[in-house]
Image (cartoon, rainbow, N blue to C red; front, side):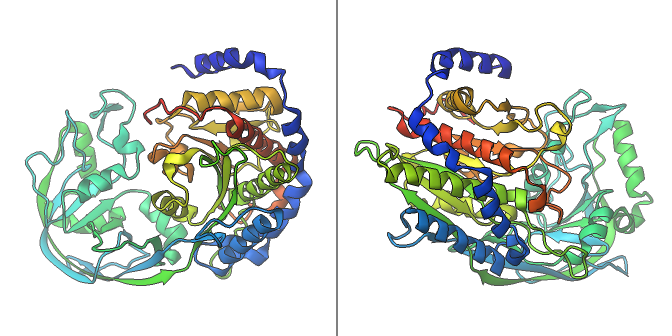
Length: 528
């Protein structure tokens, strides 16, 4: 349905409720204040927490700060009945490429290429590679038609898709397909074909190496799995210069082959003689990490088993390389603002319960670890829920709500908006509840720009709510948009708009209040 029409319909359905403000809810919402937000954020986003990187002391310190706050306001420990911490078993894999030679020339990891993936120690030797163009398979363009790449070294162009006179051979229009817009699609597809090694060449590799080359080979975190672990093909992301050395015996350069495919509009898959040798190995170690959980039981015996989750990730990206002018990525907005919000909202609900006005349903306040490493904490929680997901009515996820994003800088609504993502993906009821709470109380501008599965930024898939949505739990993701300090040392407390942070958090509080006290839970009627 058209987003504008959906909004109008929602407003029409709740018009009669707009004037019916709940005085009890309004009594406790002001607990969520700019002053309290500043108190919490000035601590967890300080240099003492060293950027809260998962698996490092700063993240552990943040988890304990959150748990201490939950305990002090009267939330219950729920993990095994006595703990505020859910252990998230992580493993750090450091993948090392020791040698990579092509036609007698040696190349260095972190300088000429970087690897992605993880696999046991292995040495590969080959006398040829298969050049597979863009590595795309579609109805009207197929680089792999009749080609078996199992057990072979393959080279593909990781730069868009075949475009002839500005028209994509995949879509037949000037609009690019998912092969270009979804970053993981091509690599996942090629790995399914079981090649021995994937070589991906693109013009942006040199810039990535320049910016992050010193971090190449650093450990990558993942959830520790029981039993055999799949090891899909390793991928080397190589510069055009490395590709040209591989293509030497073809008589063509990377640029010439790419131009030939675009001009012809047809695949140019071919086998090319090339002497390649590479050796690599993986080093693994266990990493300590925890989600921080606080539980507020509902007051209605008939509804108490149902729970609303209010979540935010407390981790950030840690320290800059040695010698940097500003060493700490403080993560005040990402996601210190969300972490602060859930602690404030928890205090408001805990006070209401203490005064005899607790919500009918239960609330789980969930501080996730490992979001910056791939949504790891929320993935583990949703795979191992403390409260069954069947009893989880909604996840309200808060990630970056303390700043003004690029699109609103200098705009009239810059201090009175929030991006709302995913509210109608799974539940029309949930979308209406979010609209109603805002119309009745906070009157923020709700911006649905990114509430779209075709959003090229893929924000719907990039924070912890997504793991709940994958399990069919309706979600709302609250977000202020990206700004110049995103994942930079400049994301500091001094740049936070605390009144705006508090107002956005109050919207979450009011939305939660209505959902927790409604006679029925949001109906899941979507398919996303």
